[in-house]
Amino acid sequence: MKCLLFSQPHFSFLLYIFLVLIHLPDLSLSDNNEWYTSCGAVFNCGNITGVDYPFWGSGRPEKCGYPGLKLGCDKDDIPIIEIMKIAYRVLDINRETKILKIARKDFMEGICVKEFVNTSIDFSLFDYAPGYGNLTFLYGCPPLYLPLPGKFTCSINGTTYKDGYVEVGVQVLGPCQVSVVVPFSSTFLLEMRDPLSLNRVFEEGFEVRWKVDSTACSECKNSNGRCGYDLASNQFTCLTRTASTADERSSPQSPLAVATPAGNSVKVNVPLTVGLSIGGAAIFGIGLGWFIFSWRQKKKRPAAQSAQTETKDLLTPSSKSLTTPRTNFSQSIPSYPSLSSHSDLEKGSTYFG
Image (cartoon, rainbow, N blue to C red; front, top):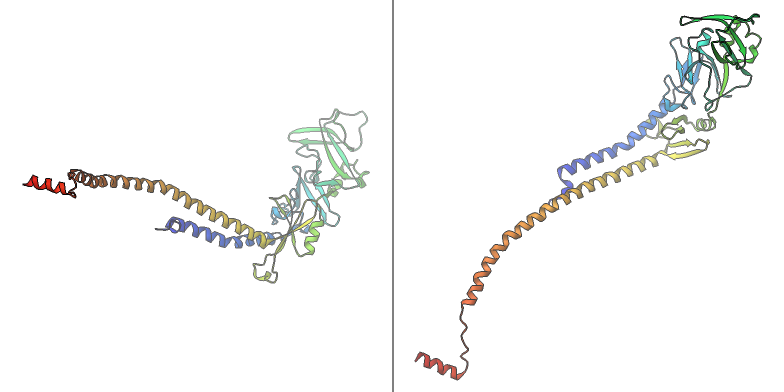
């Protein structure tokens, strides 16, 4: 009987599964190496250099930094970060204190901004650093009998906003047409009344502190790892080299340290993970192959039974034709009485006499 498991369709399928399983370890290790290598790049733009985790962007893939902390570099080689859809110039990054010094890009170009948008930071990522307050810019206010110092006029998108003022703190709009709130350093409190000095206030920007925990990343770096972020599991990941490349053969194992959101580091053995993946894929492939084999066997079984039934139907009439003559023959033979007794012999003689 021909084995259907090694027929041409099944053999091709099993060969394909075998080749896939062979290449699974290489693909997994290759992805880990690529991730590790890409996170070795640092952000460099203008006076901001050597920046790594938790920031990403401009050569650093998203999986190498924390979500929301993307850095960019504009055409003038100025580092930029976008927070709540507002672009800021990055003036300084202090990784020891986790302080990010930024300034609104639009206000650095002048107080007559094109869009009136209040400054708002993402408090899930940042907190304002101490020593900072708010300024409220009021545009298009009615004339005052006693004008305040620092009055200005802006022409924006064809509209002239006369009698503009700057007030400390968050002020209500009142009779003015538009207001915008911008953070500032309290060290420039005396200068904010002079419109000419406002440019200096904006150039100094303000400071925020990012909330991303750096403990796990520091431990990762101490173990010669590189910090990254697993977007699938939404948690910090410590990447180490795998043992598949030529310069990494001295390392028998390549653990992948994963820090939970609470900062606790959990070691995950990459070969074990790869082995489990291969085993699961092998079981799946064998199961799928057996399912196809069983399905084809079940499909052929009714056909075989039908053929067997037809064979029996053909054999039944011929057997009857042989049996019928034999039965008729046995019935055509007359039943003669036994001649064993003497009287019977005499009767027989008389009959033939």
